[in-house]
Image (cartoon, rainbow, N blue to C red; front, side, top):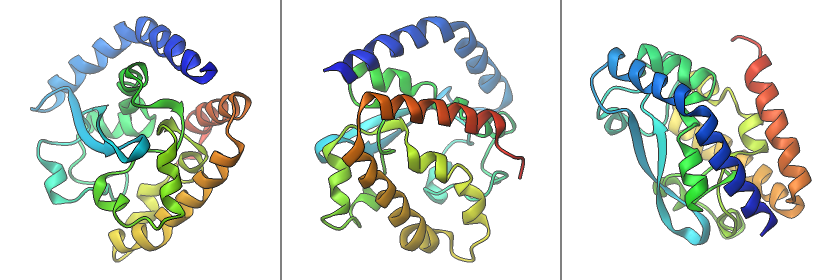
Length: 200
């Protein structure tokens, strides 16, 4: 209950404070390329239930038909504005609405698409027993995931065989130690990582 109250309070506060900034981002997105403001993607949440995750659109329309993974920071499908939104994780801000609706939490395992969840083993499926989050330890550890995939001759194989299992292992450790203090540490570390990460 404490975590849910935290999520409600700070998601509402964030939406209120950031609304002018979010409107500016929306206008820039529309001016930069054709397509809508938001990108909605079906992800798998708590108890293996699908929900619609919200992001600011950072790619050209129908880009997901060419693959679900983003490879490299300069993926040709990413718009000019989208590059900077992704770099500073600003594209994730609409997920405050997902948090307010109770589909996500501020901290928790990042929600995956169904295609990859179907590959989880029984142990890995334990991540589906908690609400997914906007950030987690795995997101911090693999903040440059796109660049790692860009170095592989087979990005999807690299993701499925190496990156995804490693992230799930970190998530399982988080679940065992989850608590408000842990979540606050993750939020602070995420902000610092985004602000001060070394340029690639």
